[in-house]
Image (cartoon, rainbow, N blue to C red; front, side, top):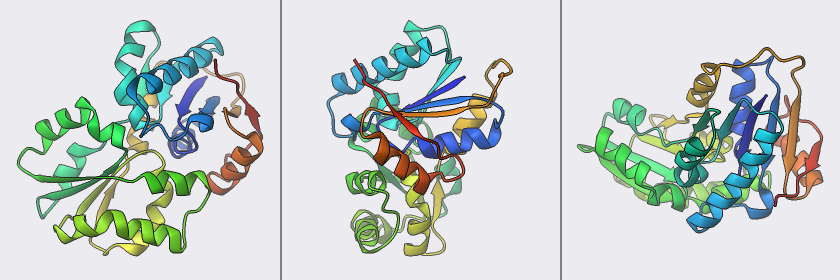
Length: 255
């Protein structure tokens, strides 16, 4: 079984990619909606929540765990890897592919506050984009909109304009979607921004990394979804965000 965790529904974008590449594997997803968003929380709280959800998934038989949250990856993944013997696959902003794509030398990074504050992000920029202009922008409204199942309309357009106008004015031609929630807004971003803008979403790359792990052949390919919040609301969001994988959601009471 592959375990996947996130602060809310954002990691469903990653689960969708994993299922597309590994359709015969069972998946268990936990969205920590009761504590969403992680991006503006202090690091110790994010770490403790991530540890608790990971422990549960391991006890359920997870052979690999995907930390489908950039904030949680930055805060917790190295310690999780040192504490457990199973593989942990995390998220990180796609700075390297963005640096390979840009023609103008300017990249926009749409991410959470925690992701942008993490040492990992600064290391990626130093390694792959030191000669480029990298403009960062926290996008808390994007998470709020996706968590409400709002993927288009006036609220979405206003948030896009708010978060991208200065980056566009700086002549950026590549935008990194540095949070697992943001790919659900990619159609709206593509419709709102100029046609030459390219987007980097690392969900597909994460799925490829998961597919490279040693996994046993499953007896059944179940998709189980859990949330620390309202399971009825989470099920409603699943039907909007991943209708091809939507299933009834169970409530999970985290320690």
